[in-house]
Image (tube, rainbow, N blue to C red; front, side):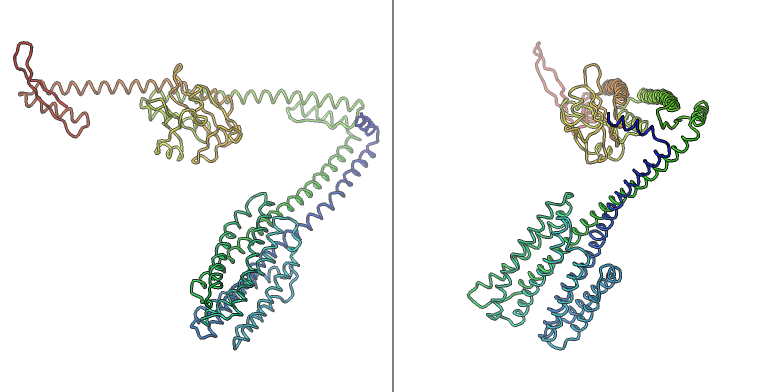
Length: 633
């Protein structure tokens, strides 16, 4: 009632007032959407683009942290007189590669991430580490490299908004990549450094022994914290992709670290002084490799989550822009038609009537009020709509007639081809090929009962999937899937959307099936098999399709029966021909031995046996005379 009064009030306004009111409404709408669009753009930039840049920048920093630690360990070995020159040079090259990659990212993202001279400081510290003259200076320069890398990591975390990540799934991955893993790597590096020194000295001091105990106790809680952070991330990731990316590397890290720590603990609790073996160093190397792999997986999962957020923000901004454009366009159109309605309402009606008389469809006149012109416009529009509805109905009827004609043509083609094929296998192949070609179905195949009437065996199919099923002798049990159901119930089964059918049986060879129809091939009350067609379009099969396919299936049943009768008749004629041939040879044999020889040879040849023998026996007849009988087997 209120809306009716409001509409009546609006119609009583002048056209200028109507235009002003509508324009004001759209201006208010656009003004309301502007802050939302700006907010989404800012969030996309801060929590999307910049976080992604920070994630990518952290990767070479983390790699540099790990690889510089490895170089430091090799340098310590070299200082202690071990021949590791080749390994040291190779590790130096790896660190240089890390720096090259970091330089490229610094050139690309450094300004956006508001970085100052962090990269240059790392380069200087690394060069100083290479020029170290003794172990003490080497350790000091290595500490400086690690400190500069950690400062760069912290700086990137702040300026890239990673530390303020708004979503739980990516927030806890950020916490792992930005905070937990660098600390974990430092702690692991300290343990490996102490172990390496002990290995170089051949034994370990009590102070180092106590330090390893302390570090081992500190590193174990990290695993619990990493597992907890990952679990929260997994639980808040609706896609499940983050778990797939990070779970296996996390499990591998846990296993490798437990082996390494367990090996150290076994030595620590030993009553003798701790002795290190190559197994401890191998376990340490494996743990470092697992740590790197796990960080890479976390970084990859974090990148995946941030990209998803960027897409989400982009969609929202795009929606705001499109909505604003549409609203502006609608406002302009309404204003245009209102202005035209001031000067030419009757002229438009006359023009529209002329266009309609010329056969143009979709002719409508704008109705802007409830006066006489408006009522005439309503009547004209109603007339045009009814006329178009009648025309659309005619078009639909013509479409149905065309489909029926096509179905009859296909049925006639199938019938014509069936009448010329007497081989059952060729018959089945011809039927499915013709059906698939005529209606462009995704797939078509035919199942026939086996001799025991217990299973359905594929007898004809289209495409590569059909060839695979035919070569494997694909079978279905009674009642299995839509085909089995159609065979048992002797009634067509139609599923326009297989995703909503609990009894549908998927086939890995046909992954794009969206709709399926199974039609029983019956002769009277006897079910001979099932014609099954599949479409890759939801709703691509309907009741009209089932009617057409049932007609084809009926023709297939008759043709199949005829082919089987022909095959049986041909087989019987062949058998009689063989018997006549053997009889003629037996009548022409001159001796009993030749008769037996011919019988054995011919029977063995035509029965397909490797060996045939003929046995003679003597028996007394009713008159007491001895007669000879021959038995061929």
